[in-house]
Structures are given as C-alpha cells and as structure tokens.
Image (cartoon, rainbow, N blue to C red):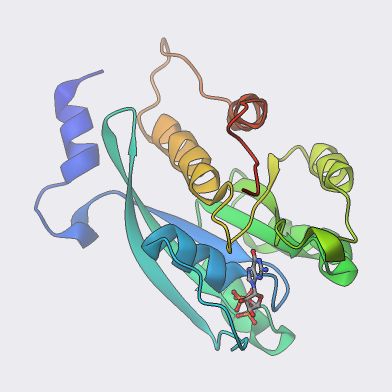
Length: 216
Ligand SMILES: Nc1nc2c(ncn2[C@@H]2O[C@H](COP(=O)(O)OP(=O)(O)OP(=O)(O)O)[C@@H](O)[C@H]2O)c(=O)[nH]1
C-alpha cells in the first residue's frame, strides 16, 4: 500500500477531524429497537436503562475505529424510527456509505417491517451502500419472538450480513461496527491486485469464534 495514500486516508490534509475521510453510517429501524442505545454502547461503553425517550429527528457521533492498524473514521447518524420523521431521514440516506438496520428480537412487527425498510433503503440510498441487519435486545431471551434463524434467512434473502446484538450487554456491538469499518476501509483503499474483503464471510467467521455471541 502506498504510504502517502494511506496517510491521507487516515489523517487528511489537516488535523481537523471534519477534513479527514469520514464514512457516513446510518442507524435505521423501527422506533424502540435500540438504535440510540447501540450507539451509546459503542461510543461510551455503557447502557442507560430506564424510560425510553424516542429520538426526535437526527444526530451524529464521530468515532475512530482502528482496523489492522489503520484509523477509520465513522460518522454515525442516529435516526428517529417514528414514522413522522421518515421524510427527514430519507434525505440522509443518499450520501450514506453504510446502513445498520435494526429490529428487536422481542418485537415481531419490528422484524416484519424490515422488508419495508429495505425497500426504502433501495429507493433512497446509493446502490452500493453497505447494509448490515442486526437483531437487537438478544439479552432478553425470555421475551424472544424472533428466532436467530429467521434473521439469518431474511439476511440471506437480501444478501446482507447479519448478527444479533445487545446494546445492554455490549454483545457484538463493537463487532458490528468493526465489520462495517473494515468493509469501508477496504473499499476506500481498494487496489486491483490486493485482497478483496468480504464482509459476510468476515461476520460468519467471527460468529464461529468461541468468544462470539455470548450473553455473559
Ligand atoms: N434489554 C435491552 N433493552 C434495550 C436494548 N437496546 C435498547 N433497549 C431499550 O429499549 C428502549 C428503546 O431504546 P432506544 O435506543 O431509545 O431505541 P431507538 O431505536 O433509538 O428508538 P427511536 O429513537 O424512537 O427510533 C429503551 O428503553 C432501551 O433501554 C437491548 O439491547 N437490551
């Protein structure tokens, strides 16, 4: 890899974060599936239990993820899941490079609505946007109504990677963002003769690790 290209990808022309290569990533899914909680867990490593306050509109958090020694900058947008904000959030899809699409494993309608979300994504987002499906609240096993296999089947149908997460315990939260960062870095620094990163293969290989996907 050409060092100059790598340096300009990592550091940009100045030390101003906003002038670096920022990969815009958006969290979408029904209201209450845990988008804000997932972002707070990833950004601050904590879960704030208690009353649910729905996101109004949209906001973002900048986060640096180190991938194979390279700094990858994600600008993560947290959108409001409520229907009344939908026209606002559509406008943000266009320049998104990645979309994390969440449902709640304890809420059937949030899973059933995934197809509608994917239709919207295909209508408003770029054709090559990276999409990852996440079944959140995996810690609430007693209230589970969507089997992990159902998530797998749906993800396979749409050709997107899938994993279950818990914003409460942190399960797979870093892994989900790491996978997205790896894919975006690989695309940004793509070389014709270099290895091509496959996000679905990466996610599947990580799920097979003994340390993966535990609720403990
Ligand atoms: N047990 C458990 N509760 C969760 C998890 N993620 C979120 N919650 C709870 O679910 C509720 C909704 O979470 P939010 O993160 O606000 O959901 P949201 O998707 O951002 O909702 P909108 O802003 O309306 O789109 C809150 O009470 C959270 O504490 C999780 O992984 N496990």
